[in-house]
Image (cartoon, rainbow, N blue to C red):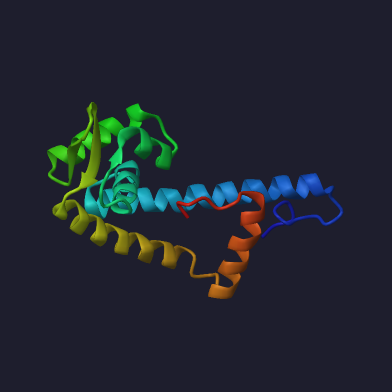
Length: 156
């Protein structure tokens, strides 16, 4: 670490916290880049597709597109195309919602669940490797500290 990278304790708290934010952002982007590349090369898939499959894997009965968008915090349009391709690939299905002929639930097929399980195991391994510099106690402490800045949601 060079002099410009070190945190100067005499800096105002706001500057130190800004530097922390920038380091968190840099680390997050770096990890995300590795995950995107691994998904592309090992599974011929994308991170958004993985995220949609991950969300659907937590809801056996499926999700309406609006609920799926809400879980992922993206627009309906962003997930519609991904779900369309998952359906084409036999990894998901759309099921009509009783009493609402315009609405459909998206859910993973058995093939989709099986494929996602393989991808999720690989993903967990990649994250474990990328963050192996943190022992379990340190990782838990960092999670607790970060929760004070951005409270955990039901997705984490």
